[in-house]
Image (cartoon, rainbow, N blue to C red; front, top):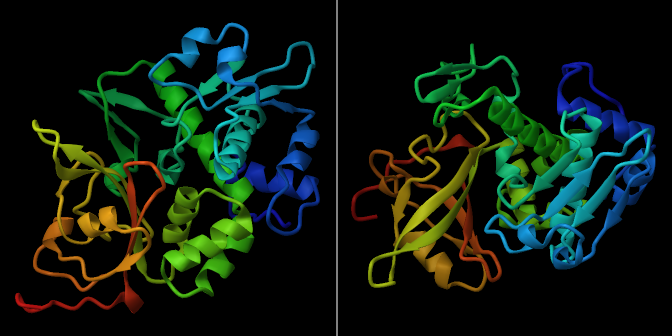
Length: 329
């Protein structure tokens, strides 16, 4: 493992690659036990209801999936991970918590739930630490004009809440690089035909969760590509009426620009069919579904994830081709 020089010394990805080099890990899947041993850390997988002092957390709406307790007086850090999580989520949680420790984040205890552990929350454009508060938005200087995602709508926040968000995003970037190091993942992803089959192949090879792999894949795909996650919403009578966008991560800035987190899409077309399907679907996704003009000839694979009310779709333009379809196509 060679640590690239182009990464800033403060980039969480650089530190993750340095740990892999120190551990002499030379191929996937990365062995989380070797990294735990490197930090002298242990993982407790006791059900949270049996963890002393955690009964309130066990019953809370934001039930934790992982926790880190910093050691005192030189003691090693200790981790707790929910025993009910999938193997892919277990690995992501372990590396996320180690990221908090290794990156020197200030707290002595970190409690992470499904929200803070979401791979989509690790965004490169949100790494700078020089924030200023303007109105009801937290603006990151020098980036707001470049990336739409660089402006995160929030209520007026304290420096402490901003720091916590920064720490969580850094920990997710660290986890992503530990599990799917760019030096291995990027060339392998680009050698595979575009689609969910590639995501599944890489997910197995790197022992990563499906969603984490899909997000990373979309970022390095040679074609214009994005991964979209949606959940259905119900009307007043309890019927499914629309899809709410959980996130849309693009490999190329501006691709599928009309799709935003929190937006609602019609409960129809490809996504509705994916909701009923037991496997993958491929098809044409119209531009209006994506908030764009006309109709776009896109390739798409969509998959409903297990028992979750969630559909993940990979959308791409093959070889950058953009074809305007006739209205009756």
